[in-house]
Image (tube, rainbow, N blue to C red; front, side, top):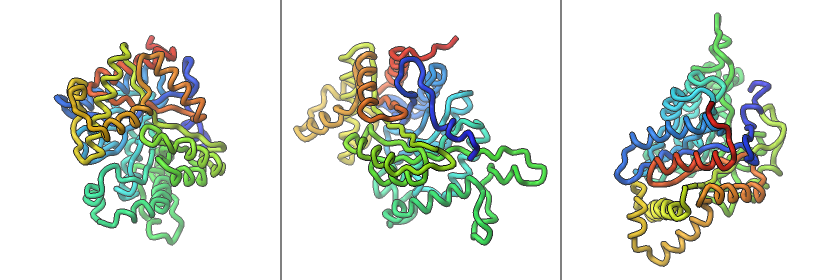
Length: 366
């Protein structure tokens, strides 16, 4: 990694935001909408995020979920790179056990060549789907092996990214291209730079591993809020300075939805929660409309789930969301807040980021 690697990781806060603000996009598809609609919304959001000073825009890998069109983060990121010039783009994350490390090194080396100096490689060890789909992805039923082998897979991936397998290693003559090997080839002028690696997690495993390796850490507060503070504490306690970072750097993913009207926020959040109910009970589908959610007959168990889920969704007017984000930052000490807006319509999601940017006085385009 170059000497300024930490500068690519540590963001800059703008306006009155306590820390840098970023975007996590699940490329959600609402009922009556298409994946094309969702991807176009992604372009609108990334353009807004870049114009308003958000730090980075990440896409999460999911599979076999009709309401989530982000099965191929590298493909989506290439598309977004063509529509932006400054904002950092990355995976939040690529689920490494689903892939050969060499393939990921090649994909993100290609992205780095497309958008030099602004690509992040966030990695997770979960499948990003159900067990049967994971088996189809990995061509094996031994799913625990992928998670258990994650540290070894990570080490192999970093070796490919840095092109530094030792002499005698079976992969010493194999090179991820585009990559550093092009800079050392006769006549080579290719940049030796490569994307910084982040570890993602929803428990303590990746927190400890990221700390031990001196890597930046991203925690999934948006679906594992009860583990946020313990995981961040473990990361900070485990941290060892590295060539990448001399001090811990942790961001957290946060479900946040701002609307012009508080009632509308509650309607949108209920629809997103109904989508989660269906996903958790083996009935994944498109994100329902607020009208469908309001007409839905929730069982007592489903109502309990809705209350628990929405307790960790910061929603309401822009001022209410700002207050909620400020409070969350104070409680966790996170170095960066990565916001994900889950709603049926792309226009609602886009408006949410605009309202939050206004609430914090983020830069406005000239």
